[in-house]
Length: 352
Image (cartoon, rainbow, N blue to C red; front, side):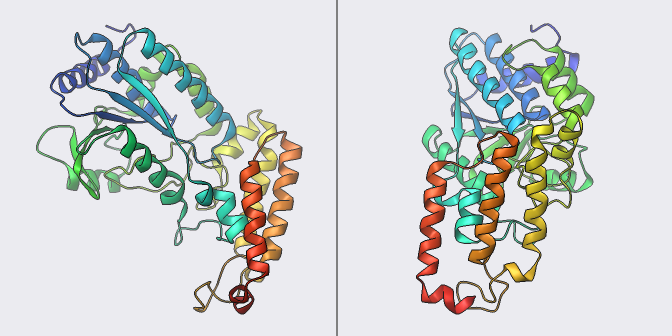
């Protein structure tokens, strides 16, 4: 037994081990880099180490939207590389897979290239394009129909979440139906964990050693963050409030996670926070929007070319001042191609 495992963690390990020994379909473990999915990784890893026969493949899936908070995405990359090597060394059938949006669906291609307004509560186009779609494509490659999806879902996080969990709960304990995917089942081994149980699992358990629980603890303390949904959970809750997710997120009124990181010593993120705040204000200024939508219906329509050019200029400034690479070369090329298409388009001229 992994030293540092509390009684509730030991019960979860036993629960996962029993489920695995009876498994006849691939497992998918959703990982976002946050505390709940990190606790889940610890428990799954230990359960696999304690089973005599490990043959059913387990795929850990992480989605890199391309606009994750840099300090978080760096920690996640280091963690997943280490977990993959550790699993190989221990002879575990655990593989790591990274999902990414298609080039045409990447955040800056959509906003700067096509003129999509930065997301709002009423037009939250980002979740499906940046997270759900990419993950589903990876799942189609690594899983078969009816795979078991393991998520770090817990009761008690909110009254609304508890109500939806109850609505999707199956007869088998810790199991739920998955919204929109009748053939798959969600297994939630840490359903009964309190926040304290999660942190004790993350910080005190030793395996996999590539997961630095104390570093994650400090990061949360600095950011006061929550993790952003990866695979569509039974609750289907969007990213919101204080969370670890996209640094460009304009669904929330204020990005408390990045603000907290800046205040705690990650000052190089300040230009990203300023850019995100500018995006939100720019989006809400009617002068930056076309009068009509691209289908000709009354607006507000896409961002004007002038607004998009200014958004790119400011993004380049944020890159220089932060020292971070924020825009890929292939994204830049596609953005300029989309601008050329609009400049020469009678349809675009008709909606400006």
